[in-house]
Image (cartoon, rainbow, N blue to C red; front, side, top):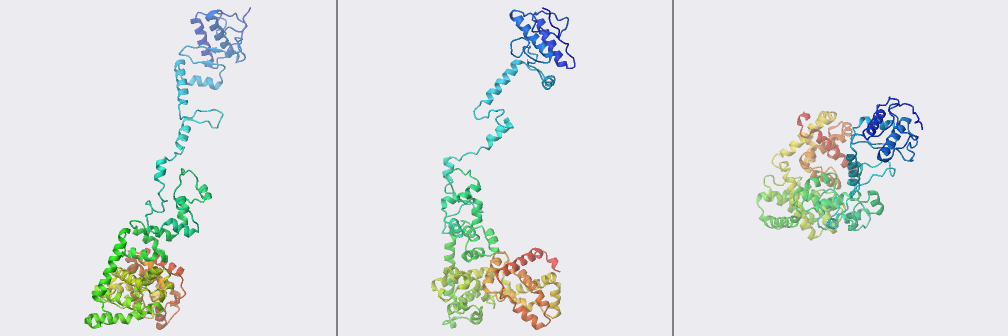
Amino acid sequence: PTRSRLPPVKRSDPSITSGCEMAEGQIQDQGGGGNHQQNPSLGGGSGGKKKGGSMGWMWNMTGGLIGRIASGGGGSPNGSGHPPVTRATNSQKIISGPQSPADQSSMKRSPSTGSGVRKKAFWNKRAQARLPGTIKQVRGAQYPPLTSRDSASMLKKQPELKSKKSTQSNRNKSIDIGSSSSLPASPVTTSGVAARETGTGAKDDDMNHDDAPQLQSTEEKAKKGKPTKNSLNALLSKRAQIFKLINEPTLDLATLRRRAWSGLCPAVRNDSWQLILGYQPANRERRGPTVTKRRNEYQDHCKKHYYGIEGDSRYSTSEKKIMHQIRLDTPRTLPSVKLLQHKSIQLLLERILYIWSIRHPASGYVQGINDLVVPFLMVFLAAKVGVEPEHLDESHLLEKHLSLVEADCFWCLSKLLDGIQDHYTAAQPGIQRMVFKLEELIHRLDQPLHAHLKKYDIRFFHFSYRWMNCLLMREVSLPLIIRVWDTYIAESDGFKVFHIYVCAAMLVKFSKDLLALEEFQDLIVFLQNLPTKDWTEKDIETLLAQAYVYKYQFEGAENHLH
């Protein structure tokens, strides 16, 4: 039969021509025959005579493929119903089925590789994909399909379960709140205080640990009633945090100062004051023995130097003068507080002031020191009997409490006066320096007020001497003075430096009232009797905040005051 002629292949795509020529050259090398002179791109079509043997099979396969490429694809030219296959040499690229333009362009760009190399790479890739712990790519099961980089990241993100040993070692660890150290064994526990503050009775085990791995979210734990670290921090009050801080094996004094600056509650004020002033040591184990030793030492001083009213004849002349002045001042100590007029309190004040004057002969007793004992006395006695300082009465004056409170007051007063002792030496240079600095501050902060006081010949020493000598004990009520002392004790130089800025803030606060007065006597009476009877703790805190601003602006920059 006559071989059908197919239309010639357009040579616009050199890859097709090169593929046909390679196939034809292979057939000639294998010894195949055929009439290729008419058209070299033609192969044995479906109507051609089939060759027998291996050469015929090769002829049919390659000829059918060339015809398929030339005709643009279609059915199976060899009549087998399967896609035609072209077997190429190692230097040729395997061609399977019809090639799209994208595939043809990729054939031009990529270098040809041997079939043996490709098979080896293919099976290596399949073997790696089946390794344990890897993720096999599944096309169509998800979008976008996983890549090797995605699978590696997913493996890294899988949470590791805690081992039984590590979980067991963490069972007794409490939740860290503000510090990396665990809560030491002490009478005060943060979990108990938190339960009292929140009104819940959560068990300690439920709050601090779980046997299961901690993989739940914060919302899930909140729904189950188990507080997380953040929620527990929010629930714990300032009192509970200070309790925890005080009961640390070694106290962080800087942290305690920061917390005390904004005010203390009565439950922690007693210990906080004593710790910051240095009466109690920072080491928790040494506090009990140290306090007991100092209390005994004070009792020894009383037995050695104080003889009471019956032993006046045993005092020396100088000692009699000191005792006489003390006995004049003790009844004048805050006469508005009825408890201070009790006989036992009068004797307590007398012993404290006399022993202090004997131990500090450079200054001795100076009028005004008696007022400084009162805040310590009220705070320490209230802590012993468990009431608020303003609720103390004569029924709380028990001998077993007074003896301990007296010793504590003496040592804390000594710590306070050690920082301002030049206030009570000859000529009182410390007070004069504070008064002079107060005047400079007012000149800088409120020049109209400064000019107004100067106009009516009001000298700052006339009214501010008592402010510096008694630390505003006569200007503000006792509960508010205790609040002020929280900040003074928390400040490193609260009674010596910060107190000046508090006085300046007070003058600026009453500036309008003072500017309205135009008589010397009216101004003096107003300054010595400031209208603070109706003040609340909020007013005091506003005053302290303003004083802090002034200190931040002018402390350490005295040139700005001139």
